[in-house]
Image (cartoon, rainbow, N blue to C red; front, side):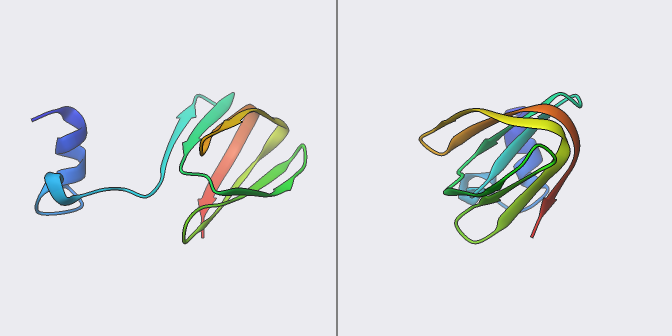
Length: 86
């Protein structure tokens, strides 16, 4: 069993049946990589609001910039202070 399967196992009885609709990786306090982004709702240097399939993600920080947005993958650079899933 891979490490990611072990993590998924904490959320379901069968990692094979667990398909997260959204993934985010925080890179220290200097960036974030998000998957399954459907739309950029709002963009400012201190807050980026993103639409997922059924949720909204708010990334707060300083000097935030979107460096890449392609095929649902999004890379944010800047000082990350918080990520909230609504």
